[in-house]
Length: 344
Image (cartoon, rainbow, N blue to C red; front, side):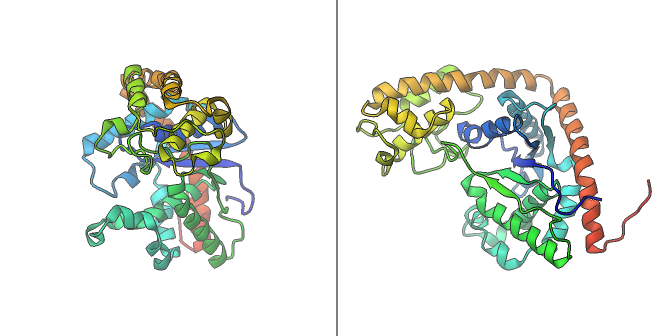
């Protein structure tokens, strides 16, 4: 049985297989995933395909998107021998625990989730029940591994707070202090929220109709350089300190991207480039982006040329994930009082 209150330092994070990963996904998530697999954590990274189907997906396109995301993960540096890589639907414990959490979470909690309101829009009655219950499944994704840390963007922070609330309530309701950890968010880095290259007030998104608004991980060097050259800026020189970026969303975005790609702080970047115009800064940013991002596309193509190998890697990852999740799920059933087979 999983022991209450004694938790391995374990990172879990999931990304929806929706195709066309872009620079925002890389800097806001995947780059940190790669860094964490070299730190003092067990690292588990999941293609959350069950979350994807909370809105309609064309089946063949979904299968392709799962493989594409796995290829992108590995092309960015995630090593399936160091991290566990798998797609969510191959580990049934996610949905089994999610049902229990549906019975722990309160309607009032779910009604406060702003992302459901944003995604459902004015026609919430036509949204799927899955979209409404999305945060409960996300809590199960995390807690079925007793994950202690989750790297998240600002837009997912509320869901992680709900995960902590569910863990606390379960532990209290079933008198098992410390059984589920109060998972800590990891929100860090110079560009955790990358904005559109055409509008610094909007998040970079694959749904933006303008391809110039984003750098896709499948873009070649010419496309990357072109998009940086055409990125919206303002006519003022760069400031010499971060405070000078206030009220300048495009400048803040491009400086943040440079900092995240270079591994420097925003103040370090401005220490070098402060007082200079974008006509000088953007070519340097383009060169840096090409150096860091363009090789990813070639590696992705290599992985995608062998879908059977991708499937093998995800299957192996699912086996390893299940070996962690199943004892935790069984202990959860015992706490709840659910009868289960003891065979084997």
